[in-house]
Image (cartoon, rainbow, N blue to C red):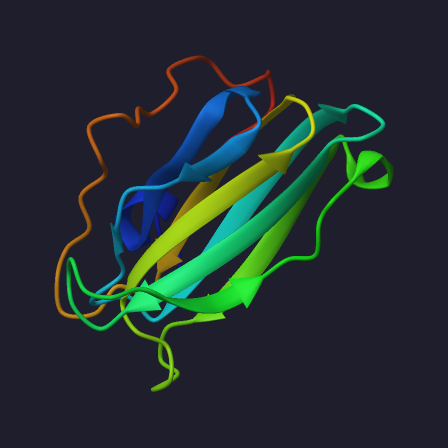
Length: 148
């Protein structure tokens, strides 16, 4: 049986820390996806007020600090879409997708609770190290559960 630790093959990137998102654009720092074959963006939203909308935009560039162009835009999420987790798979092997990414959550008309993170997987040619703002949980497994 093959077993691999998630943290050794995937990189976790904080895109937008969970918080109250005020009206306006919340753009992530540049995400360097060089050396990975796939990405999964996770966006989680709390309660949206009746008039609040959230638009998710992913942009990409061929070089760090380069000119970012729109790769993907989600339609404006509204009160019917709240209290959910949304995901977007990104095929980083696609030659039309550049390796430097940014994510923007644009909140309109009010505030909402939300956040986002990206999982980068399929590391090629190098070991994965997790960012400083991630930590492995310490705790105990329930009786009878063997995680190994």
